[in-house]
Image: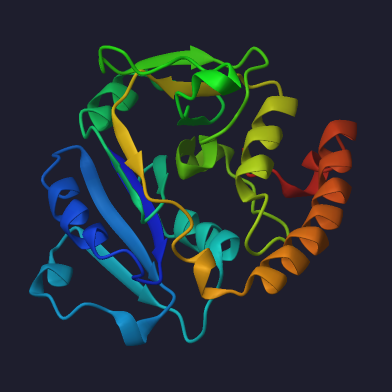
Length: 231
């Protein structure tokens, strides 16, 4: 079974309809929604569905702390971290559960952009490719991880570099990361980030980049795992 973690500020209206399709998938055990803007919560009885668990943040927790909270709240070992502005072929849930072994690292979306050297979407059959140096564009839009391998994204990283952390944490721990390729999907992109001014986004990016460089150096050195690993 698979647990889904999906923070949202309800900036992308089709998100709700996609959730209604997701809960019909029988190997999806639960959808954990971290509601970071209660004022925008849709008035829809669907949100009372037994698979839906909504956690109302008293103020915006931001993306990475929301992921930390959501993963800890999951009942399944296989966790899907889902952007709220993405649509994709729901057969993926069955394929991932069959493919994903505890010895693997993280599995994330490959955008299929040929200009980045990624495998293009052709037949839409949904494939998995091990990381061998490919461009990682798209990886953080849709990720699958093992709760038993999870380590919290460190403080100081609120909006950015959470997907980089997940990727690097597994990679430098010796676990092979995989890309989801050849899958039809659509990503509207950065709907929540538009709530911030361009100046604020740039300032946050620069601040969090400095912090992530510190974190990554500890991951590469192997010192991060001494106190932070749950696996």
